[in-house]
Length: 118
Image 1: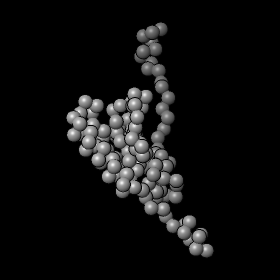
Image 2: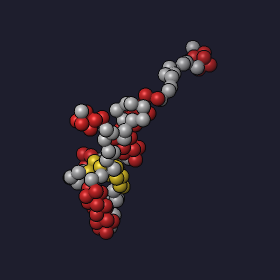
Image 3: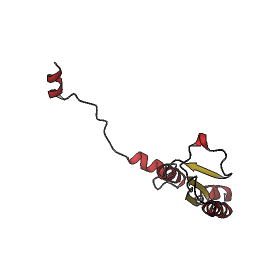
Image 4: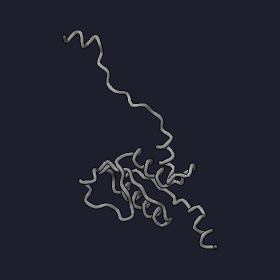
């Protein structure tokens, strides 16, 4: 019974640390501070996300334990995918996706443009 109760307990949310990588031509001090922030976040056990302008194919090597994103939007989506659902779904991101409403609007020919062509 104790194992079942333990399995049903909500899992702790892993802290998410989002950092912006310095520009490639930034001073060495900026890079040193960035590396220090990464190490501190890893030591805390955070999920370390770095927004970088360097394309994945152009990155010579990434920092171990760091996930790189092209922009803030992608990083925030990743964070939402790791947060618990409030509606019983797999994640907060799934809550958002399932609650999106919208209609598919198909293209419609402009009658005036059709008459001009004809």
